Image (cartoon, rainbow, N blue to C red; front, side, top):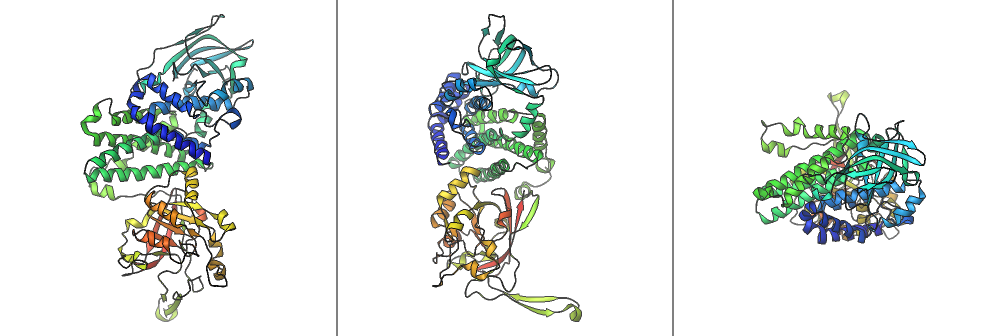
Amino acid sequence: MKDHHSLLNTAKSYLLEEVAPSANEIDCNPNSLFHALRGLGKLGLLALKVPHRWGGKEFSEQTYGNFQELVARYSGALAFVQTQHQSAAGMLVASSNSSLQEEYLPRMGNGEVLLGVGFSQLRREGDPLTVAIPVPGGYQLNGVVPWVTGWEFFSEFIVAATLPDGRAVFGIVPLLETHQDSGGAVTLSTPAQLAAMTSSNTVTATLNNWFLSAERIVFMKPAGWIHENDQKNVLRATFLATGCALAGLDILESVASRKSLPFIQKAFDSLQQELNNCRNAVREAQNNPGLKLSERLQLRAWAIDLAGRIAHAAVTVSSGAAIYSHHNAQRVYREALVFTVTGQTRAVMEATLLRLTRADFYNEPHRRTEEREEERKISYSRVIHLSYVIDTDIPQWQGDPPVEFETVAELYKDGYYLRRFSMGEHSATHINAPNSFHLDGVGIEEYSAGSLVVPAVVIDIREQVVVNPDYALCVEDILAWEERYGEIPPSCVVLLYTCWQEKWLDNNAFFNQDTQGGMHFPGFGSDATRFLLEERQIAGLGIDTHGVDSGQDTTFVTNRLVLERQGIVLENLTNLDQLPPTGATLAIGVLRLRGGSGSPAGVMGFVP
């Protein structure tokens, strides 16, 4: 995992230093694009999902998605072309043709061999565009492959042709004008004049009686394979769209820093938050094989929608300059259009159109702009209580007021039932206020309603806590979590799941005091807290123990750091095991006690 993180950092450095400054040139000049592609090869980044035994990096699907997003952020054309090569490598990995694997795979990671693909025509309805007829020693191929990217970059490509029984044969053929002694031929059109990524040299290949020998066959696939594969991998192209959206955000951020116009910064903050939510939801979906196809399609459509809207926003803030073809905003806008239709199926088209035609979001001219900006929607499949039931025997910090109930009216006597209760402001599941640690801090009643509805991420440190009950979250834990789920988005609450909730019914176990009275339970380390606040700009922290500070930290550093910024501190949470690592939303209900140092809190988690 550390090696993969290092490789991503290497890729980012290369993209920032060598690719980003030439992105517009790379978009239109094949030589510049080829040079950028070779640069990825020199870094060994062109066979990322290939196993180590074949010279690859063996990236997980999640890490590969991070890489795809990174490349698309700095050059859509480079992302588009290298994806073809990576896909070809993945096909060879799945092949049973060991001779082809030995010939190609060890040389694909460094770009010594560059290989394209051409099988999108299998998605088309009606008669197949490319057909294969069995002949002695292999197959004879005839037809048209309408979309093959990388002419003059790739020496060959993997083609798919449909057999009479509906199956498809995949094999390697030249990506250049070639004539066989037997009379077979591959001919190519001139490169298509695309609206974007013209440098990708996308051509149409025509096969006339081309003989594909058995030695050049990658594999055979059953009828309908392409449609099943599209459903399985519906989220794969999503990272190209989110990378394009990040490119648009980079433009917005740059303009916001130069122009003192608050509405640009407000637009940037809003779009950045939405994009982070989308990216986190996509990464969570990758780890949830049981997620329905319809939900995956919605995520894909969301990413496409965001790429288009953010690119449009980049054009908007760039004003008339964005009309020039060489302007970054113009290029990113055109890239968003390409990624809208990349790997498109009928289902993706339908989901995208449904997203783009949401009447409740776009077609309400009668509503004031301010009302639309204030509107927030939480989509959820279930709601979870994250607060304990308050009772007289709950674990309480030494010196806290006891929980007491007193009946003041009885149903049989007074016609209604009523109790009075009293408890400390920091008992049960609760939220802390700045004035509990800072003389000039505000009370709990000063928290705005909007600040108490926040996205959440959950970091699981159960394994560390089993070994060490005093364990404090460190920066390395955060980076490891981000390697799997993506960067922690700003303005969220980071929840720490330690499994301490299992000790709630045992007061001694919950505080875990030693003979000297010292308490032993896990929490957030000070370095991790500073990292989350300063580098990730989070809204606050929460934990399933009695303190975000570990039991051994009697100075309450984490509390002080968070509350100094009027952040959120939630303690004594429960049911964190029922929340996903990303994608949940918290609704925090507080008692607005005048000058309150905190408040018992009814916290609910909305799970998408």
